Image (cartoon, rainbow, N blue to C red; front, top):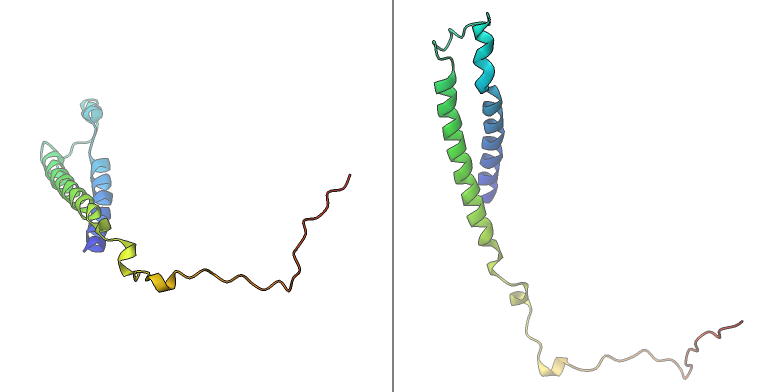
Length: 113
């Protein structure tokens, strides 16, 4: 479920970036006042109402997936890794035997001048 939601979130975020970049800025209509091309394909207002609606729905979907992913990631760490470890009994707490040295004790190297 988290993987599918992450894929949808990434796709919506990329779509939102593209749709915002397609929109005109506030000063874009100044070029049309000095002989720029008219936008008759989408009517007199241009594609603004359609792009605004698409942007709004993409932003709502982006926010919903963001909140859902944040909620799901907060519920991941409920368990403990120590649940699977068997409890240590008192008989298992024996001292670790040291390797036999055959009576030879290693000496530290002498420091020379």
